[in-house]
Image (tube, rainbow, N blue to C red; front, side, top):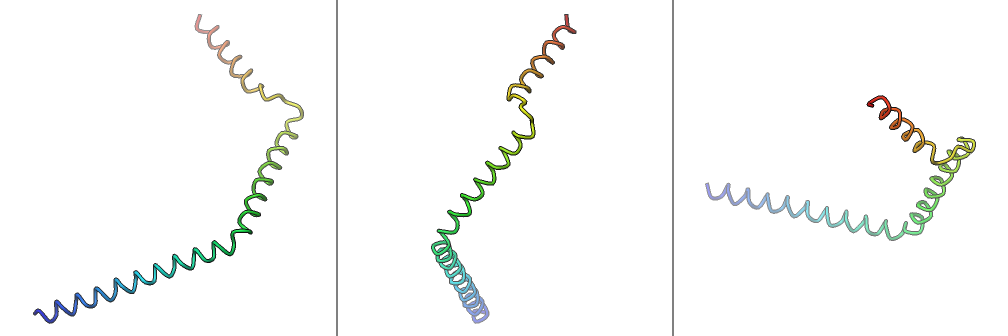
Amino acid sequence: MDNILIEGLKLMLIGMSTVFVFLLLMIALIDIVAYFTQKYAVIELAQIELDKLARINKGRKKKNGASKETPAAVIAAAVSAYEADQK
């Protein structure tokens, strides 16, 4: 009985050690790849920001001169109409 228990513990130790070493290698490889692609990540983030700004500017051009206060005016008019109905 003790022999089976010891063999099970050995198998568990080997399996857990294998997984631990694999995870350490994976983390090391991810860090190495991150180090070598650091320059490209900065360029990509800058391009994403430029694309975001271009979409915002494109949306502003589609409004054809509508002011930013238009939603506030609509809300104020709705509140005034609601208050007038309540009186």
